[in-house]
Image 1 (cartoon, one colour):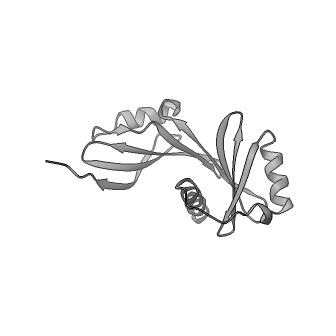
Image 2 (cartoon, rainbow, N blue to C red; image 1 turned 45 degrees about the vertical axis):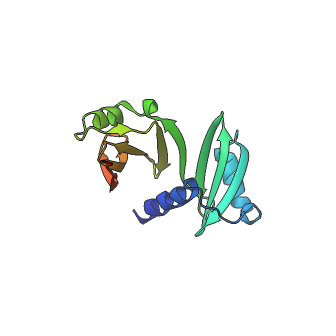
Length: 152
């Protein structure tokens, strides 16, 4: 569980446009070899490092992806953005059946780690902006909830 939290933190930092020092020269041959083996058709690869995790951002078949590796070259997880319409049916149905009248952002982060896929998304119901995480079975968890300012 601690490993998943570390991965999610690394991706969150990466995707929230926090600037890190360029770690391209620090990436070991072991990590680069594993990356090239796993993502053979990747292009435009850029590396960043934080807290011992190496994150590659790249293009593969026209999609923007990120992948996180540890010092040993082990793939910890990968992510990409998909549209709301691309969510698996289990997740779509679970979100549709949620109470609260949420309208969801079209951009969803799909994260795969430890053989499991999760979807991070944001819903807005006019009173709250709620960040949620769903697994591929359709189990939805609220990760944060923020009251919206209501103008009178």
